[in-house]
Length: 151
Image (cartoon, rainbow, N blue to C red; front, side, top):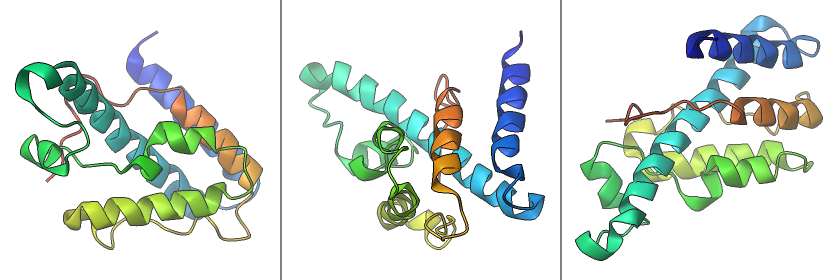
């Protein structure tokens, strides 16, 4: 099966997870915000691993924001990284955790200021389904070979 087909299949499953609780105009923002978060987190992880592997030779610090800016990759702070969020996916606070992650990303990446959705904590959004959606999106890899470059 092609990678594009798998991605499409996963995106439809993501839409199905939320379809019962909200209309398409609403759930597209939920899903797309999470996909963007996963995408930049995958790009960050890829560069983080490269920096960590060459740290002794280059002196690069994988936690230094400037390393990411130099490579045109968005810096993702620890509390906004996909692995951290996925580890909290089953907690009732996951909506607030995602909103806080979006705030942290905007703070560390001025070009994203005011752009990211921050309404995951709203009461109408089923947190169990949100956690399932995070697990589903977590099953796909959105960055291979440095495609997650930002401005």
